[in-house]
Image (cartoon, rainbow, N blue to C red; front, side):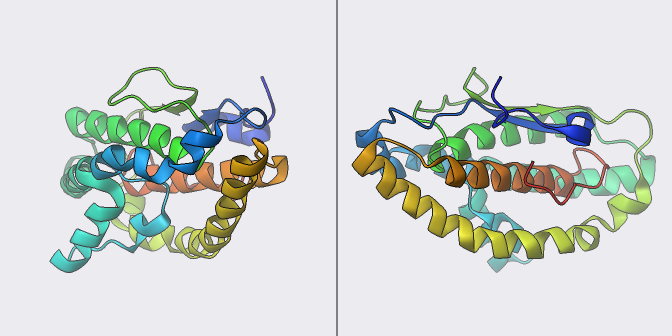
Length: 222
């Protein structure tokens, strides 16, 4: 398997693993040219790769912005995380049904984000069918860490700042990659590695904020 899709070092043991089969050459220029239009149905359901997810808070106004960034199912996953936050604090357990629903959302979002970010050309399935971009989540075992759950948003703030800064660069590199694919049929390897790395980083932090596990995310593009 290519090193573009395989975690290295200690990252292999982290409970959130994102794998994308690399697609650098012979890209589909036509679907790339109209990618934003083609992905719209999925964006309404689970959102795309934008880091706007992290601007959400519990007010109605910001909640609408968060829904627009993560889609309808993403809004449901956010509500599940809010309920699970209380459940974990009082019982030390994440209700199984809520965990599965949030995990389902995040797996779907990974597939859509890979397509929207031009990492793959295959149209993503509506649901949990196979796709060359996958998310593996290891369910937490035993009692949850109530202290880190209580302070989850504060603990994630350093990541959110870095992701916000790198996300600006990601927007520019994705635009460059769009032109490169449309005119040459190729995604530059360096830009691909950066895009995939930041994509992994954002997904790990989103899983952490959705309370799907308690391990602190690494500051890493690997």
